[in-house]
Amino acid sequence: MVTEIPDELRQATVRRDGGTAWLASLPALVDELLQRWNCVPDGPTVGGKVGIVVPAKSGAHGDVVLKVSCPHPANVHEPDAYETWAGHGAVQVWERDDERFAMLLERVGPDRPYEVLPVDDAVRVAGVLVRRLAVPAPPQLPRVSDWAAEWAEIVDRAAGRLPDQVVKAARETVRDLCRDQPDTMVHGDLHLNNVLRGVREPWQVIDPSGWAGDPAFDASTLLRTTAVGGLAVGFIAPEEFEPALLRWLAIFAEAAELDPEHVRRWAQVRAVVRAQQHFEWDTPQSDQDTNDHFASVLT
View 1: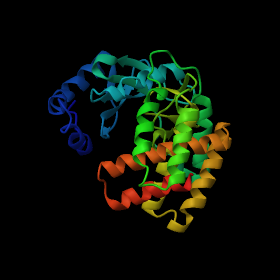
View 2 (view 1 turned 135 degrees about the horizontal axis):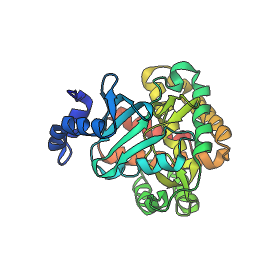
View 3 (view 1 turned 30 degrees about the vertical axis):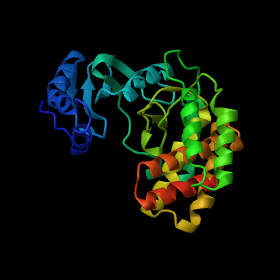
View 4 (view 1 turned 90 degrees about the horizontal axis):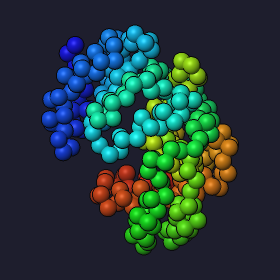
């Protein structure tokens, strides 16, 4: 087959070290993997910023997708997460080639929760999945707690820029929660675009980073992308931002069977870290203001 490389993947990859060479090798690699795993392409190729996904029919597993990612440390433990969950709340991994950053995965989707449900219910779906995914993590996974020292430094740099009470609350959370965490599986990049309508189950997650830590860690990405994304596309108005965010926090915590205050603290410290990073990266002022507001609302 002739593999079409999506523009988004091409543009994101050419900026990486070795990205141009990897893109040149990708069509032949896809053909090789499809043949090795006895698959026939079954639909248009899609891709994001880190990899390509080829729908296919498998002689052994039926409807599947071949996913090949650009080699990067952040992609190393995705197959470990899938294997740990064994299809419970996540897609099943049928084959893996870690050297090529390639996997053959169960096909699901394409619907995402917010496309077919009210947003409150979509957030509830994600919370239920977080509870299901909170199983013991294998020892080779990176630990969220390893970032605590770096987060403490970033929070300290926010002093004087963010309100004192916002920085103080984040410092206390790093001290109380971030340094000592359970060895529990966390998705690491949980947002509503990474939840798809399942075949074996109502909803299943995709694209995990594969980390070990506190299940409440995943609340921040989910809440930020839902609230900030909702503000950006206009399904919530600026005056609705705070009540909607706090409502979604409560819905998520209840569905995930987590203490709401615990969830709020995790989301707040990660919001402060992100807000300070975006300030230092000199992102557009509107993005900085939104990130700062997100952190303040959660304090």
